[in-house]
Image (cartoon, rainbow, N blue to C red; front, side, top):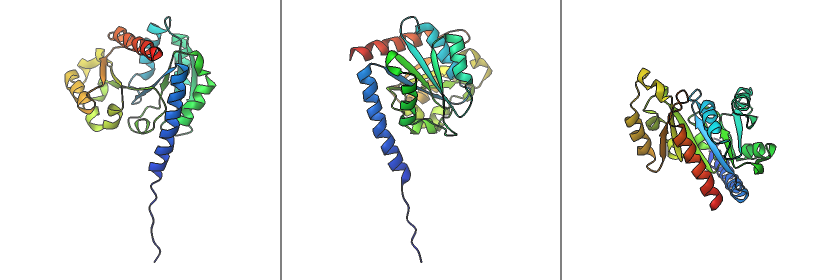
Length: 224
Protein backbone atom coordinates (compact mmCIF):
# COMPACT_ATOMS: atom_id res chain seq x y z
CA UNK A 1 0.00 0.00 0.00
CA UNK A 2 1.00 3.58 -0.55
CA UNK A 3 2.16 5.73 2.32
CA UNK A 4 0.47 8.88 3.54
CA UNK A 5 2.75 11.78 4.35
CA UNK A 6 1.71 14.90 6.28
CA UNK A 7 3.41 18.20 5.47
CA UNK A 8 3.09 21.05 7.97
CA UNK A 9 2.60 23.89 5.50
CA UNK A 10 1.23 26.28 8.11
CA UNK A 11 4.45 26.27 10.09
CA UNK A 12 6.51 27.14 7.04
CA UNK A 13 4.06 29.81 5.86
CA UNK A 14 3.95 31.48 9.27
CA UNK A 15 7.75 31.35 9.62
CA UNK A 16 8.30 32.99 6.23
CA UNK A 17 5.72 35.68 7.00
CA UNK A 18 7.18 36.32 10.45
CA UNK A 19 10.62 36.87 8.93
CA UNK A 20 9.26 39.39 6.42
CA UNK A 21 7.27 41.08 9.18
CA UNK A 22 10.42 41.62 11.23
CA UNK A 23 12.14 43.24 8.24
CA UNK A 24 9.15 45.53 7.72
CA UNK A 25 9.12 46.49 11.41
CA UNK A 26 12.80 47.38 11.22
CA UNK A 27 12.17 49.56 8.16
CA UNK A 28 9.32 51.35 9.93
CA UNK A 29 11.52 51.92 12.97
CA UNK A 30 14.29 53.35 10.78
CA UNK A 31 11.82 55.73 9.12
CA UNK A 32 10.16 56.73 12.42
CA UNK A 33 6.67 55.62 11.38
CA UNK A 34 4.34 54.01 13.93
CA UNK A 35 2.11 51.42 12.24
CA UNK A 36 -0.89 50.32 14.30
CA UNK A 37 -2.70 47.11 13.38
CA UNK A 38 -6.37 47.51 14.41
CA UNK A 39 -8.36 44.28 14.83
CA UNK A 40 -11.92 43.46 15.88
CA UNK A 41 -15.10 41.63 14.95
CA UNK A 42 -17.21 43.17 12.17
CA UNK A 43 -19.32 45.96 13.62
CA UNK A 44 -17.31 46.46 16.79
CA UNK A 45 -16.58 50.06 15.83
CA UNK A 46 -13.13 50.12 14.19
CA UNK A 47 -13.91 52.88 11.70
CA UNK A 48 -15.94 54.92 14.19
CA UNK A 49 -13.20 54.68 16.79
CA UNK A 50 -10.52 55.65 14.28
CA UNK A 51 -12.65 58.63 13.23
CA UNK A 52 -12.95 59.88 16.83
CA UNK A 53 -9.27 59.27 17.55
CA UNK A 54 -7.94 60.79 14.35
CA UNK A 55 -10.01 63.94 14.73
CA UNK A 56 -8.50 64.44 18.17
CA UNK A 57 -4.84 64.03 17.11
CA UNK A 58 -4.65 65.07 13.44
CA UNK A 59 -3.64 68.67 14.26
CA UNK A 60 -0.64 67.40 16.22
CA UNK A 61 0.68 64.54 14.06
CA UNK A 62 0.55 63.37 10.45
CA UNK A 63 -1.95 60.53 10.13
CA UNK A 64 -3.00 58.10 7.40
CA UNK A 65 -5.27 55.05 7.32
CA UNK A 66 -5.13 51.81 5.36
CA UNK A 67 -8.49 50.05 5.24
CA UNK A 68 -8.55 46.31 4.54
CA UNK A 69 -11.69 44.55 3.35
CA UNK A 70 -12.62 41.67 1.10
CA UNK A 71 -14.44 44.17 -1.15
CA UNK A 72 -15.79 47.76 -1.34
CA UNK A 73 -14.17 51.05 -0.31
CA UNK A 74 -16.88 52.11 2.16
CA UNK A 75 -14.56 52.46 5.15
CA UNK A 76 -11.83 54.35 3.28
CA UNK A 77 -14.40 56.79 1.92
CA UNK A 78 -15.82 57.23 5.42
CA UNK A 79 -12.40 58.07 6.88
CA UNK A 80 -11.68 60.65 4.18
CA UNK A 81 -15.13 62.22 4.51
CA UNK A 82 -15.18 62.38 8.32
CA UNK A 83 -11.54 63.15 9.13
CA UNK A 84 -9.94 64.61 6.00
CA UNK A 85 -6.78 62.51 6.38
CA UNK A 86 -5.30 60.32 3.65
CA UNK A 87 -6.76 56.84 3.32
CA UNK A 88 -6.44 53.94 0.91
CA UNK A 89 -8.51 50.79 0.54
CA UNK A 90 -6.82 47.39 0.43
CA UNK A 91 -8.76 44.49 -1.10
CA UNK A 92 -7.63 41.11 0.18
CA UNK A 93 -9.03 39.02 -2.69
CA UNK A 94 -11.23 36.98 -0.38
CA UNK A 95 -8.60 36.43 2.33
CA UNK A 96 -9.69 37.04 5.92
CA UNK A 97 -6.45 38.67 7.06
CA UNK A 98 -3.45 40.73 6.02
CA UNK A 99 0.10 39.43 6.02
CA UNK A 100 3.43 41.28 5.95
CA UNK A 101 3.71 41.41 2.15
CA UNK A 102 0.19 42.83 1.76
CA UNK A 103 0.95 45.42 4.42
CA UNK A 104 4.19 46.49 2.76
CA UNK A 105 2.42 46.82 -0.59
CA UNK A 106 -0.17 49.11 0.99
CA UNK A 107 2.48 51.17 2.77
CA UNK A 108 4.43 51.72 -0.42
CA UNK A 109 1.26 52.75 -2.24
CA UNK A 110 0.50 55.40 0.37
CA UNK A 111 4.13 56.68 0.51
CA UNK A 112 4.29 55.88 4.21
CA UNK A 113 7.47 57.76 5.14
CA UNK A 114 5.69 61.13 5.26
CA UNK A 115 3.44 60.13 8.18
CA UNK A 116 3.98 59.89 11.94
CA UNK A 117 1.33 57.23 12.48
CA UNK A 118 -0.59 54.94 10.13
CA UNK A 119 -3.60 52.93 11.25
CA UNK A 120 -4.10 49.62 9.48
CA UNK A 121 -7.74 48.59 9.87
CA UNK A 122 -7.56 44.84 9.46
CA UNK A 123 -10.34 42.59 8.17
CA UNK A 124 -13.15 42.12 10.72
CA UNK A 125 -12.38 38.76 12.32
CA UNK A 126 -11.22 37.58 15.76
CA UNK A 127 -9.23 34.59 14.50
CA UNK A 128 -7.27 34.98 11.23
CA UNK A 129 -5.88 38.52 11.74
CA UNK A 130 -4.44 37.46 15.10
CA UNK A 131 -2.52 34.60 13.50
CA UNK A 132 -0.65 36.64 10.89
CA UNK A 133 2.04 39.17 11.76
CA UNK A 134 1.46 42.25 9.59
CA UNK A 135 4.78 43.84 10.48
CA UNK A 136 2.99 46.50 12.53
CA UNK A 137 4.84 48.18 15.37
CA UNK A 138 1.76 47.91 17.57
CA UNK A 139 -1.31 45.62 17.70
CA UNK A 140 -4.60 46.75 19.19
CA UNK A 141 -8.12 45.37 19.20
CA UNK A 142 -11.59 46.75 19.77
CA UNK A 143 -14.24 44.83 21.70
CA UNK A 144 -17.77 46.23 21.79
CA UNK A 145 -20.14 45.81 24.71
CA UNK A 146 -22.63 44.15 22.36
CA UNK A 147 -20.27 41.19 21.89
CA UNK A 148 -20.20 40.01 25.51
CA UNK A 149 -17.63 40.07 28.30
CA UNK A 150 -16.54 36.46 27.67
CA UNK A 151 -14.74 37.05 24.34
CA UNK A 152 -11.25 37.14 25.91
CA UNK A 153 -11.86 33.61 27.20
CA UNK A 154 -13.15 32.32 23.85
CA UNK A 155 -10.61 34.01 21.52
CA UNK A 156 -7.38 34.10 23.55
CA UNK A 157 -4.77 34.77 20.85
CA UNK A 158 -6.02 38.17 19.73
CA UNK A 159 -6.04 39.42 23.33
CA UNK A 160 -2.66 37.90 24.11
CA UNK A 161 -0.89 39.68 21.23
CA UNK A 162 -2.35 43.17 21.75
CA UNK A 163 -0.72 46.17 23.37
CA UNK A 164 -4.09 47.87 23.83
CA UNK A 165 -7.71 46.74 24.09
CA UNK A 166 -10.41 49.34 23.50
CA UNK A 167 -13.85 48.52 24.88
CA UNK A 168 -16.28 50.40 22.66
CA UNK A 169 -19.96 51.38 22.91
CA UNK A 170 -19.93 51.76 26.69
CA UNK A 171 -22.83 54.20 26.32
CA UNK A 172 -24.94 51.16 25.37
CA UNK A 173 -23.73 48.88 28.15
CA UNK A 174 -27.08 48.96 29.95
CA UNK A 175 -28.77 47.31 26.98
CA UNK A 176 -26.54 44.23 27.04
CA UNK A 177 -25.49 41.54 29.50
CA UNK A 178 -22.01 42.98 29.82
CA UNK A 179 -20.01 43.34 33.02
CA UNK A 180 -17.19 45.84 32.41
CA UNK A 181 -15.13 44.83 35.45
CA UNK A 182 -15.49 41.15 34.59
CA UNK A 183 -14.46 41.83 31.00
CA UNK A 184 -11.34 43.69 32.11
CA UNK A 185 -10.49 40.80 34.45
CA UNK A 186 -10.89 38.38 31.53
CA UNK A 187 -8.67 40.53 29.33
CA UNK A 188 -5.90 40.82 31.93
CA UNK A 189 -6.17 37.09 32.60
CA UNK A 190 -5.05 36.59 28.99
CA UNK A 191 -2.58 39.49 28.97
CA UNK A 192 -1.49 41.03 32.26
CA UNK A 193 0.49 43.82 30.56
CA UNK A 194 -2.22 45.09 28.19
CA UNK A 195 -3.73 48.57 28.53
CA UNK A 196 -7.55 48.68 28.54
CA UNK A 197 -9.45 51.87 27.63
CA UNK A 198 -13.28 51.93 27.61
CA UNK A 199 -14.75 54.48 25.18
CA UNK A 200 -17.93 55.76 23.60
CA UNK A 201 -17.80 57.26 20.13
CA UNK A 202 -21.30 58.62 20.69
CA UNK A 203 -20.57 60.57 23.89
CA UNK A 204 -16.76 60.81 23.31
CA UNK A 205 -16.11 59.37 26.76
CA UNK A 206 -12.59 57.96 26.89
CA UNK A 207 -11.43 59.56 23.63
CA UNK A 208 -9.14 62.04 25.39
CA UNK A 209 -7.46 59.20 27.28
CA UNK A 210 -7.11 57.27 24.02
CA UNK A 211 -5.63 60.29 22.24
CA UNK A 212 -3.11 60.86 25.01
CA UNK A 213 -2.11 57.20 24.86
CA UNK A 214 -1.28 57.41 21.15
CA UNK A 215 0.41 60.80 21.28
CA UNK A 216 2.67 59.48 24.05
CA UNK A 217 3.41 56.38 21.97
CA UNK A 218 4.36 58.49 18.95
CA UNK A 219 6.62 60.76 21.00
CA UNK A 220 8.34 57.85 22.74
CA UNK A 221 8.74 55.99 19.47
CA UNK A 222 10.49 58.92 17.84
CA UNK A 223 12.81 59.39 20.82
CA UNK A 224 14.15 55.83 20.67
